[in-house]
Length: 273
Image (tube, rainbow, N blue to C red; front, side):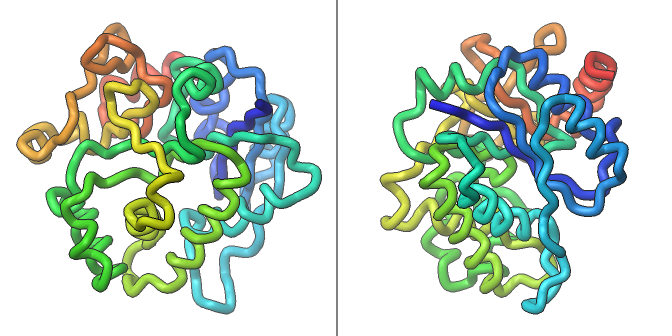
């Protein structure tokens, strides 16, 4: 199965994205590398191309339906990208860029462990128990919120799976985001959490936890143990010699939000500088 790692960035310089790019280089991944770019300097495009990336310009962020930030807009552009005849990949791993690194080859994990069409990582806390998600999701989708508030929140920052399924899923996230009632914060993750808990999508979604070793979102699980600790639904990651591992001492394939842990952030920036 041909796999691509895909990102979307705006305004970033090579320095901003180097840990993500260099971690891909070092993790053993041999698949495609694709980046959607919005208003980035030419030096960033040149850097990406020198590292073997296909670079595509995302469409204008200022739309007739109203301003939508990149975290929302990327989904319709990913839909368009995946529908291009020249997009030759069967599987994609779509991640945030500035705060994500790969500790091992994601293709190998998916080959061994993927059981459904779309793979999404838990944030290790129920929606109602995290102030940001409770505020954002309830404001974005007040009708749907009562049915999802007791579900575990899942993060839109790392999504993997079969391209055909992701294409339609990303279109749905975008359409739902346009209809979100919250105009103060981007509703993309709220839309994702509504969709993955609808019967229509449930059978397509593989929800993974820390024991699976796929991804950890450190912004909840490690950044604020005093605040979130009593509400965590999963084990707390550990940092061993600069490597983030789960309770089984297995390194996570993907680490997200490492920049919120100052000691880990310093180590990673030094490692990939």
